[in-house]
Length: 311
Image (cartoon, rainbow, N blue to C red; front, side):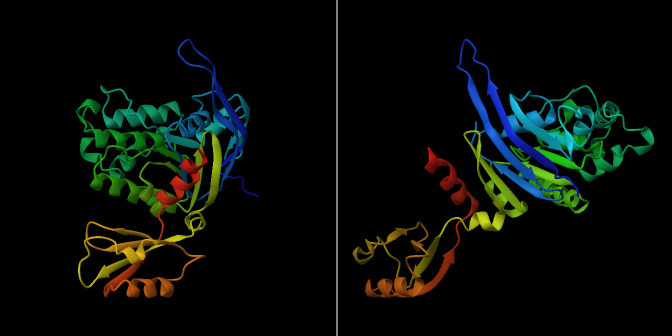
């Protein structure tokens, strides 16, 4: 049986107290299994424990308790194999600015012991739109290009698992689209992709499964469609025939708002209210409907409901 891409059991991390801050329990016995071949979203507010978990897997932070395996390799007892199985793209842009992109990738491949005959430096540079900057100094690259180079460095040893920690933070829309196109291409080739992002629409569009971490604990871990179904609310959006200036008094008992574009948005619980009943109340309020539509909750709504409601 093929082992999962990531298998975490009872993972705990406590940062020691310092003169400036008390001890902090960053991870509280996390259990998490990420199947191979998935695009897996790991979401959570700042300080939730995402980066701590990633840094433990990458070997940058020492865990306090528990176990973690990457493609079946234990990070403690099979360290070399585990690290060779993972590529991590960090949030922070940090690299030697006096190397060229080509040199940076060649050096990275050397660190992982990739034979020269098996290196894909030019292929990776081409795929990430850096071929024309192959021999430029890194310090001459834009911020977006430097972020592409971080991704390129994480791919030099052809890892079966790729972790992208906020990869599109601060990049323009065009670059973001290019990055996601390449991520999908990697996934199609069999790479397991783990994504952390604050752009929830990206996670919703890309990920087939999502876990939400909050205060060092996993609060949800479901396929994206099921997670979206966690909210039993929808919004009925009415475009009146005659523009409204305020919500009619007859609709005060409903959760109704008048939007800036003149539409009337009524949020309702699907288990307690039905659209025909709502339409009757709208008709009783003397509103003639020119158009209507319904809106489903998005991932941000689910995220908020699973984190902030617990505080």
